[in-house]
Structures are given as C-alpha cells and as structure tokens.
Length: 548
Image 1 (spheres, rainbow, N blue to C red):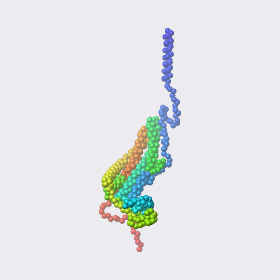
Image 2: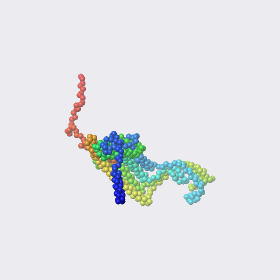
Image 3: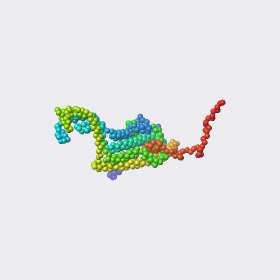
Image 4: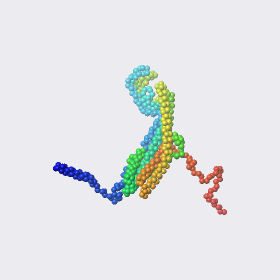
C-alpha cells in the first residue's frame, strides 16, 4: 500500500509540473513599445507609413563653366589641333624638298684655299726617279690644286644626271600635291571629330536637363503615391515602386553630369585645351541642322564626292608620281651624266731644283731658275665630262623598270580601294540621314503622346481617380520618349556632318539645286503667254500742271 501511495503522489506532482511548463511556454512574448507617431503621420493604426521623397542628390559639377559654340570650336581646332599642325608641317617639309629639286639646276659654289708640300723622290713620266722638295699653294674659286693637274675641287661644280634632275622636279611637284591633299583630308577628319565631339557635349547637356526635369516629376509622383499609401487609398508597394523610380532618376541625373564632363574633356583634347576646363554649349535648343539638301539624289552625291574628296586627289597624285618614276627608270640608261667644273684663282710655289744655282732644265730644254716658293699668278680651269651608265650591264636597269611598274599597279589598286571606301561612306551617310529624318517625326509624336498621357494620368491622380501605378508607368514612358527624341535629333545632325565630310566638304554652290515644283507656290493671277502691254501703274503721281 505504501508503495502504491508514493507512486500516485509522484505521478500527481509530475502532471502538475507539465501543466505549469506548458502554460509558461504558451504565453505570448512581451509586446514592443509603440513608436512615437508625429503630427504628420496620419496613417491608420496597424499601417506602415511610406517615406516622403528625399532631396535631389549632390552634383559633381563645379562652378566656372566656359560657354562655347560650334563656330568657336572649329576656329580653335584650326589653330590649336596638333594633327592639323603636324599635317601643315609635313607640307612645309615637302615644299622644301621641291625647292631642293629645283635648286639642282644651279651649280655648287666652292671657295677656299689649299697648300701642298712634298719632300722626297718622285717618278717622272719617263720612269726617271727624281729627288725633289716642292710646295704649292692655291686660293680663290675652288681648292686642292696640286702639281700640273686640274683643281680637284672646282669652284663651280655640276654633277647630275639629266633624267634624274628633270623627273625629280616633276616628282617633287606631285609629292607637294599629295601632301596638300593629305593635309586637307586630315583637316576634314579633324573638323568632323570636333563637330561630333561638340554634338556629344550638346547631347550630354541636353540629357542632363532632361534628367533634372524627369527627376522633378518623379519626385512629385513619389510624393503623391506616398500620400495615397499613408491615407490608405493606395498600396505601400506602389509607393515603393515610385521611390525606386525616383532613385533611378537620381542615378540618371548623376550619370548625365558625368557624361557632360566626359564630353567636355574630349572636346578639350581636340582643341588642345586644359582638360579641367568645363565647356558648356550655348545652344538653347537642339534642332535639326540640314547641311546637305534632301532633293540631291545619291548618284549626284557620289559624283560630288569623286571630285571633292582630298583622299582621291592624294591617290591620283600618287599614281602620277609612280608614272614619273616609271618613265625615269626607262630613260635612265639613255640620260647622260654631266660633270662640269670651273675654277679660277691664284697659284704659286717652287722647289729645291729651280732655286739652286744654275736652275733646272725642263722638258723643253730650257733652263729655269726661280725662288723655292713664290712666283704667284692667276690660273683658271674648265672641266666638262659627259658619260652614260648601264647599271650592272643593263640588268640593274631592267630590275628598276619592273619595280617601278609594280609600284604603278599598287598605287592604282590603292586608288580603287580608296574610291570604294569613299562611295561606301557616302552611301552609308546618305542612308543614315534619310533614316534619322523619318525617325525625328516619329520621336516627336511619341514625345507628345507620352506627355499628354502623363498629364492626363497626373490630373486623374490629383483628382482622386485612378491608381498611382499608372502614373509611374506614364512617367517611365515619357522619360524614355524625351531621351529618344533628343538622341534622334543629335544623331540626325551627326549624320548630316558625316555626309558633308564624306562629300569632301563641297562649297555651297556645288550643293545648290532648284526648288522642287511642288514647293513653288502658284501665282495668284494667271498670266496668259505671249506679248503683254504693261499699263502705267495707278500709284504714279499725276502730272503737275504748268501755270501760264
């Protein structure tokens, strides 16, 4: 009995302990103290309020911008761009080489003096060994007169090949034309790069303005959606979407500022300016700029490019240069080499043989006696040498001809390659211009429609109708349409500049065309053909009567 009673007591205590433990576990946790609700928080109890839109982000732009327009940028590029300056210096070098080629027609002028002294034996023409100590001196036009020979360094000296001198002059002229054409091509490319860089700067400034406008509208949308969520008329998820959209507009605004600074630095590089200089375009509006008239068909544009492109002019001058080189190689064996020398000056000297008592008997049997150094008097020498050269027995001349003929074919192939490149550039630029022109109208209509849709949705939301989510979608479409409209106009202007440069920057009279008949207004009064009598206009004053 005692054992059963003690077992029952133990079971009773165990049940009581389990009940107490379960009761403690089942109690709810202590509630956190409620947050302090400000006077602006009017959300119902149990609702989570949406935050108000934050202020705009900080800017990376620094004060001190420098206004610039396209004309000023082009003028600075023409003066400060290193590529243009290098091309102009190349022209100066080629012109100097041409002057050198022309100067080959003039002889070299040598002025100087020389002294010669010999001590020891000499061999006469008869084979006799003669011991003599002699010396001589020459001064005047030329130098190095020794013994009975001519002046070794003539005063006036010609040494040229007639064919090389003539064709060298012709080749130098063509090389000057090539350098000028290459410089014109570099100028066109540089000015195009400047125009495109300025358009990029204009694009960046325009996108920054659009980003700021979009950010302001996104802030208004975020404020409306937050108020709807706080008053219980909308969902907090819509307010969160609007807040995310606002953050994206903040990112776009900062990126637009970075793009503006990048475009400014690139333009400064082309203008040789300090990259820390921040340039700002003065254009108030971005408008289409048609440089090449639309009525000009593509075949006429190709013909204009063939006549105006400096790259083709450079290739043509290179072909003429190679043809002159081929002609020179053919006539080189038959072109004489001419050497002409003329000298005039004072010459004197003496030896131990003529200064000894009794003098010296010369080859004619006369006795000559003179001082050991003296007897100065004038002398003149004229030497003319003409000869023909067949290089390596004529085999070398044949190799020169074949090499020059190969260079002619190479230059013609390069001309054809450049021609195909020019035609492709004109066709591509013409197609881009036509496409961008049509895209401008579509982008304009899209911008207007998206603006009307956003205004209508904003009015409905402000009037308490519709969902805030519709306003967020309308804002996205409007922002994208604005960017696309700006990019379409900028791309159209880029295509116009590219087409104009692809044509070789032709003058205005080369692009002038008559006005299409459908654009000419019809006359108000139909005038029949044939001879007409012009009546006196009624506006003329009446004749003044003459008093008697």
